[in-house]
Structure formats: structure tokens, C-alpha cells
Image (cartoon, rainbow, N blue to C red; front, side, top):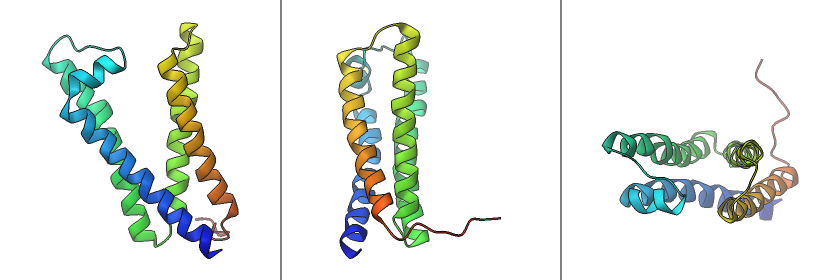
Length: 137
């Protein structure tokens, strides 16, 4: 139990740091990030939109994971949130690929990494005995 608890805390910390670093990293070099994912901004408003959509979302998720962990005194809720968000990324990557009729190697590599993130999170959540059995009502 203690080992799972420690691994859960490490997972939560890694995911929170990953989201924050990813958001700030893109913010530091917007043009490079846009080019890496095959996008371009036609003007400054496009870059601001990218900052709002990607950077603020990623940083906000990372901070939310950390705050939920801090205030709830357990890693479970943060891990559930991280797994849910990353699962959503996977689902919408797949949906987008189906809608467009193709999946790029970039999307495949993102999905593979995200599947690992989800699998590790789910394994820790399932193995943990901390999952609350009481629901808000």
C-alpha cells in the first residue's frame, strides 16, 4: 500500500510538472511549437489564440493537479483528473484522425506516449485502496 501511495504521489507530481512545463515550453517558442505540429498563425491574433488554447490550458491543468493534491491531501483525485484529461486527448486525436481519414506519425507518437500515461495512472488508481467509497450527494 505504501509503495503504491508513493508511486501515486510521484505520478501526480510528474503529470503536474509535465503539463506546466509543456505549456511554458510552447510559450517560449510559439513559432517552433506551431511548426512542429504542422500549424501556423497568420497574424498576432492567431498566436494569442494559440497561447490561450494550448499554453494556458496546459499550465492550468498542471496547476490544478498540484492544487487538488495539496488541498485534498491525496494523489487520487489529481490522478483521476490527469487520466481523464489525457484519455480525452487520445479520444479526440482518434476522432480527428477518423474525421480527416488519416493519422500522421506525429499523432501516433503522441497517442503511444499518452496511452502509457493513462495506463500507469489507471494501474495506480486501481491498485490504491484510497479510492473514496463515499460520493458527494
